[in-house]
Length: 132
Ligand code: FES
Image (cartoon, rainbow, N blue to C red; front, top):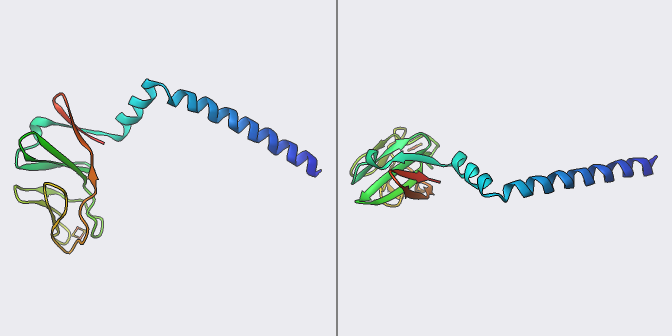
């Protein structure tokens, strides 16, 4: 009886390996890579990001501290998890307890937060800033 159970498990393992191999082959294609990137990235029109300021779009904050220099951060405040909701020429602000973060690197400008915003990658692609 034990032998039968082991045989069944061996067959399942072989089948599982076969499925993983097939998936691995698909992920290696250029089309698979670009669709994965598109699913996790956010595009913001460059024209919508004011120089010396920024904007909050969904789960990300995009800033342009100086002309042509774009930065991006997670919008989730590291204090207690509220979403930051305002970007001024001075800072990125959280409405819940008043924390403020620097436009240039997301570092804490005013507590109670003790950690800065999580940085994302901002890349200009044509007329858009792509946040990944
Ligand atoms: S959650 Fe942002 S300051 Fe508290």
